Image 1 (cartoon, rainbow, N blue to C red):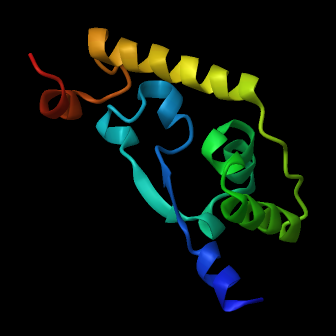
Image 2: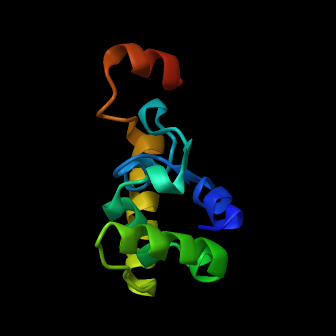
Length: 118
């Protein structure tokens, strides 16, 4: 493996956690943006990145790294799907709107006091 590939595998990916983007688009304290190396992402996460992140489709280096990670794990690498991207975006908008208008129902009372404006 080349040094470039080793470094690229350490490329950080921003994530809100499983279901975090759809839930509130990062507006809840429980779903804040975190950075982690691509090689530390679960296979299903890498597959979702390929399926619904247009920017990866436009960045062949990142796409190649994700494909190689999945190949090493014996997993399939799906193609980008604009319908999946739209569904994710719609879910995020709906979740974010619910948080803005009603507050985050999944937050405990302590976190609500710190997060929600009265």
